[in-house]
Image (cartoon, rainbow, N blue to C red; front, side, top):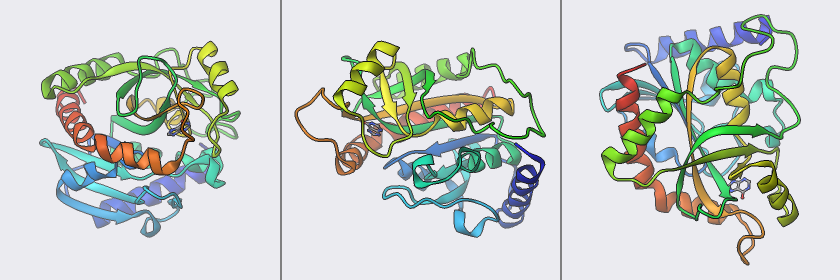
Length: 277
Ligand code: HPA
């Protein structure tokens, strides 16, 4: 992040601190397509629309509300991004990660991300929850491209997804009786869904699920030294695995169906991570 972007994030953080009184958040959450309902579970909820926060980009995608929500979840202070912006909306990746940089600036030492994704691996079905254990960046760009005023120039990605946070996710899933699978997430630019040939290519490359987000955010968070965990909600079988055409309507409908399990898993995960954050 260059010095100008860094001062924009600092200005946004000052605004949030002035407009949402209370102790600093320790765990950050990023809620993907159709998964924003978790924010309604916060107690002492303070909701700040992205449009009100200086320099914060805003999303145009259905199912992405666009609020920063501060409050408590399971007794842990959290800052929760209800909706995110994507590269395919036209934002440079450096802008796409503004929200997670703000979470770090506010004090979050751990960030848990979620997304909607297509299932490539045979064991994944529409409605399953997949912990992301690693990713493949196929966006052709990096949020770290450009001058770097803070953090390492060449950050290590060999353990991008924190082992302890991942273990906490498995334990949380057991706590609440939710089935949790795990795998590798490939991040593509979109916004068109993939062709069946592209899905066969991604399977060969080692990807289990595919989506259009998360990867830039994880890269930026790791560069800032924030510990990361992530879960994909598999909203559909990837292209070519089902005779049905893919649609955002299906993505939102499956996310709505999985919502209750997702909320229970993330609440239990935050509680467990709150102990180590
Ligand atoms: N491909 C890419 N992104 C997605 C998909 C998919 O099948 N489902 C939800 N987001």
